[in-house]
Image 1 (cartoon, one colour):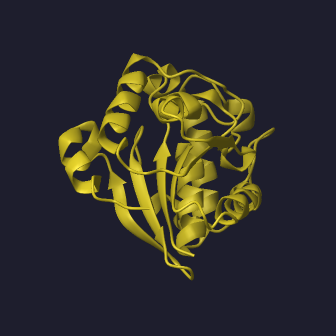
Image 2: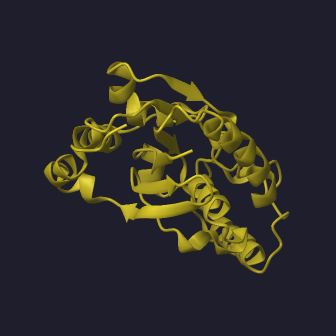
Length: 217
């Protein structure tokens, strides 16, 4: 089975702009910049023959790829693509206390304690379980050759570890910004990153249209 996964993070929200963590429990909308990013991404990739779209249960992912849905591409919501839940810190202002708590948590994860989490939140190991379930659904359709996936920042980093076989402790080796693209090829045995942290569509959509106009199913 040959498959290409176009995986993007959702567009900007007001909480993104303010540097406030959203997480799985904050179902926020895109702001004006996020809607502009969504249109830029569509303009750049509208000629890719996507067979299916997979998004999280949170509306900011659907809003980010709505033009593709409006064009008639079928889509499915999978909770396995939801953002990691940050529990009691979701939506909280960035204070020295909260910044310190996040720094301590990240240090724990990097050191290998992947079960630690905030009160009411999720650990990386818990997110991996539901991501593997979602991936099983996505990969169970060999007829879907080109797939668009829209998800969230921390969850994206974890999924890329799962796909590439990296330990979850290396999640931060995958940078991202709003509506950045990771393009992943699957040759029937292994996943390979074809495009790494690609934000060119947010700068020059015309180049991307030319690059992908000859893609075939």
